[in-house]
Image (cartoon, rainbow, N blue to C red; front, side):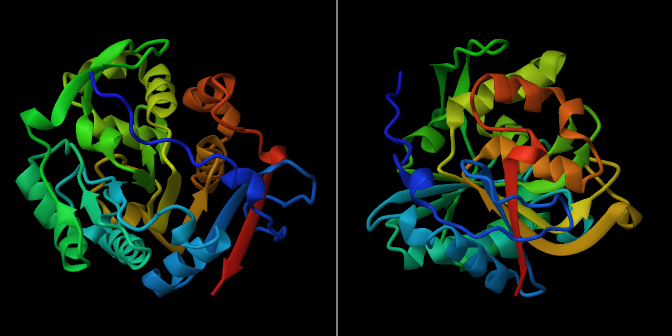
Length: 299
């Protein structure tokens, strides 16, 4: 079994100093020790990603010279970008560029798609955009998986994508969308694309599964794509009337807080989403909107 080479960058969260912004999502508070969620709005996607990372101290706060970085977008469905079923390829490309500028030795992009991988990687536009930005894009194959101990409440042991665990830096880049089973797709739900095996079994208790996988993977950073948001018809989409253009990206070091803010954005109450409650009980972050500072800016 693989030993995890990645480690959480100790003290990064404690070292951040931010100012509170008033937000249209939730009123920000100046109280101390609250989770910070950063929201940047711009029609220029690369500009928004750069501004977002500046709020977090720059990509160099996460990526060091020579690091292998793995980016995990939501690349599950054979849908073009305008349908908002997958992460916007421009968002992925912008993150690739920043990682390489910070000195990354290698940037990998992958996902265990639900539809045919060849179709998804092509139609989503992510593979081409990421490769053009300098990333190594690959289909996960049998040799990429290894059974690992998850030690969750529902998932005990499962096949995990080894490159995700072996990377020096792990960045989660999901899209925000409505989901028929889990209510929303955001950061934590995205980890179902980092495992193999019979994922249909996980839907028997999808909310506990999401919390279990979130506790196992623990990304260094989560960036949520809200440039286009699928408000209904998720996770696959297919009707442009269900898509809302927001031109926003969000990030946080607290994955639970980030998903809670995403839930609010999608018109759901965080307390009504079971996996947020389970993740909070596991100590992965806070789902209480009163304990979250939302720092929102238009650039």
